[in-house]
Length: 129
Image (cartoon, rainbow, N blue to C red):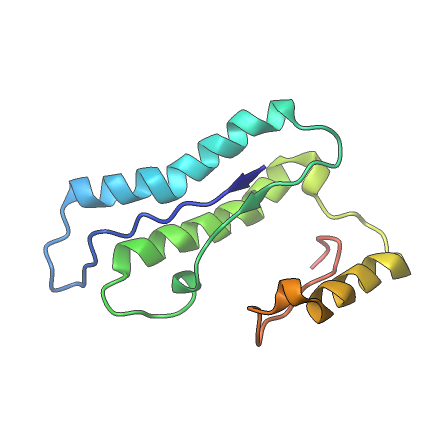
């Protein structure tokens, strides 16, 4: 199951008058929508299924007038961490990786599929750290 949302309007700063309706609309699309998509998908997933939620660099970097958008994307990242504890299948695997599992990560990083990824860490830790 993959979920990508990206409603960022209005772009606001603390000097702007952030209206509750603006906050609620962005929260509903960017955060609430992803949570309910997961909740709906889980009963239909097979063992070993995957959940992928999309966040944004705005969650961890400051961008002018991205206050609401960034807060929602940070919420999505926190939600992913907590959902892994909620879903027993995503909890730490409690074992060392097989060489082929590590090799798959290396193969991805060396492939054209990772062409837009730069300066990031790919954690292959089985959810243990």
